[in-house]
Structure formats: structure tokens, C-alpha cells
Image (cartoon, rainbow, N blue to C red; front, side):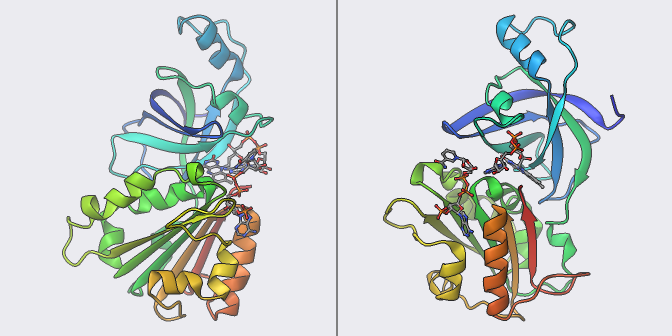
Length: 273
Ligand SMILES: Cc1cc2nc3c(=O)[nH]c(=O)nc-3n(C[C@H](O)[C@H](O)[C@H](O)COP(=O)(O)OP(=O)(O)OC[C@H]3O[C@@H](n4cnc5c(N)ncnc54)[C@H](O)[C@@H]3O)c2cc1C
Ligand SMILES: NC(=O)c1ccc[n+]([C@@H]2O[C@H](COP(=O)([O-])OP(=O)(O)OC[C@H]3O[C@@H](n4cnc5c(N)ncnc54)[C@H](OP(=O)(O)O)[C@@H]3O)[C@@H](O)[C@H]2O)c1
């Protein structure tokens, strides 16, 4: 096993829908990361099945067939545990196994953090507005950033727009609504968090219903936030479905924003597949 791979224990599990769940694992003492980064998590299907069938006795006889996948960290860099938010893909090699996780099971964690969807990528001074646009589990890195006090100090407004197919798939809504109270009170002049839920496949009161690019091009998202998007005042981060990332990037470019490179520019992105 590589030096970077450690075994971590599952401490809790929250099921949101049959296709979505979150879980926390123990955090190795030496493991450090920046809000927005991802790690590689590993399962050994035989071991997981062995745990389930044998009352979590010993895994000595399980053959070695580890499968690793990238996972954004939901929890803050200052938390004692690591939290993750996962899809279940019916035929997916990783999540068809991971969905059976139970408290007490073990997972593999590659403790090398990856990724540049972090606020550190932007050159200071920060502009006044941060837009965080997510589909599905692409919410994860933004939850980590929103649990980092620096984010609340660096901006005047943080707009979080989070798109899911149905209302029940909008996970973490209560936690998002609590963030302003929990983190916004810990710094002087905290940012104002503006949360915009989007539900695309059923009409829901209080949620927008169109896809992100359309909402941006029509100005609906900006009107809902009460803030303009412009090249001087805005950082925008996109995370989740690659088609959303591409289409939204194009919409933002049409609105005059530019990709962030070497610290300069507005738009930063992360694709999940
Ligand atoms: C940088 C990065 C960070 C990631 N972070 C997360 C995360 O925090 N949570 C998470 O659930 N997944 C995340 N993923 C996706 C994850 O790595 C796996 O793809 C996912 O766990 C499915 O694995 P699988 O083997 O079951 O299916 P795969 O064979 O990996 O995927 C099969 C298909 O399922 C769909 N798919 C895969 N992942 C997702 C997803 N998250 N949401 C919707 N559809 C998906 C795609 O159509 C994909 O082609 C991330 C991926 C990357 C590259
Ligand atoms: N969610 C389910 O009920 C369900 C059921 C069975 C299987 N799955 C599988 O699970 C995987 C992911 O499902 P998911 O619902 O988490 O992710 P998803 O398909 O990425 O949908 C999440 C959100 O992203 C939006 N979106 C998709 N493409 C977009 C684009 N180009 N521009 C802007 N917004 C876009 C969706 O809007 P739209 O609604 O307009 O697409 C939805 O609001 C898929 O591979 C799917 O086959 C999901």
C-alpha cells in the first residue's frame, strides 16, 4: 500500500434519498487540506461485504481489490472529522459498493489532497462578490469553503446557487440556512450569504426552475441575488456536471467574465466526470 494511504473509520452516515448520502470518517492527525480540495477514497468491495456478512469481525481473509475515486471534502479544514457527500450510481464500480457503508466500516483515504478549486487560487485583493454555482454533489467543495472563516472575511456577498432535479435531492438546505448564523457572526463585517435553490424537474415554491446558463443569460439569477455580475466585482466557481460547467462557462463569458488563470480572472471550475 502506498505511504499516502491510510485506513479511516466511518463515524456517521446520513441518507438523503436512495441516490444520495453523506458520511463522516475519522481524520488522520497529519492530514491537512484547503477548503475546496478533494481526496481519493478507496473501498475494497470484498472487505465491505465481509464486514456486512461477518458482523465486522476481521477482514484478514478478504482479497485485495481496492477501487479509488475522487471525492471533494465537505467539512472545513478545521473540523476533527472528514465529511463527504456522495451520489449512488447503480452500476458504478465505486458507489454501488460505497452505498452499503455502515458506521464502524473502514475506508481507504489517500491523504494527498488535490485540486485548485480553492479561494487561494485568486490573487488578493478579492473583489466584493463570490458566486458559487453547483449541481448535485458539486455542492461539496462550497460547503467546505463556507465553513472557513476566511471566506466570510474576504467577500461582501456570497451567492450560493445549487441545482438539483427534485426538491428531495437538494441536500444540506437546513445546514446552508444555518451557515450565516454560525459563521457570519464570528468575524467583523461578514459577507452576506444569499442562497438560491434551483429545482429543475418539479415546480417548488421558493426555488428557481431553469438551468443555470439560462438563468444567467436572462439575468434571473442576478435579479434573485440582487447583485450584478461584472468583471471587476466577481469571482465565480462552478462545480458538478461537466455539461453544466461547460454551458455555464460559455454563458458567463457571454456576460463578459473571463477564466481565471495565474490568479487573474473570474471563473474557476471543477468537473466531476
Ligand atoms: C475532482 C472530483 C471530485 C469529485 N467529488 C465527488 C463528490 O464529492 N461526491 C460524489 O458523489 N462524486 C464525486 N466525484 C465523482 C466520483 O469520483 C465518482 O465518479 C463517483 O463516486 C461515481 O463512482 P462510480 O465508480 O460509482 O461511477 P463512475 O464509473 O465513476 O461514474 C459513472 C457515471 O456516473 C455519473 N456520475 C459520476 N459521479 C457523479 C456525481 N457525483 N454526480 C452525478 N453523476 C455522477 C457520470 O455520468 C459518470 O460517467 C468527483 C469527481 C472528481 C473528478
Ligand atoms: N436524480 C435522479 O433522479 C436520478 C435517477 C436515476 C439515475 N440518476 C443518475 O444519477 C446521475 C446524476 O444525477 P444528478 O441528478 O445528481 O445530476 P445531474 O443530472 O447533473 O442533475 C443535477 C442538476 O444539474 C442540472 N443540469 C444538468 N445538466 C445541466 C446543464 N448542461 N446546464 C445546467 N444545469 C444542468 C440538472 O438539471 P436538469 O434537470 O434540467 O437536467 C439538475 O438540476 C446521472 O448520471 C443520472 O443518470 C439520477
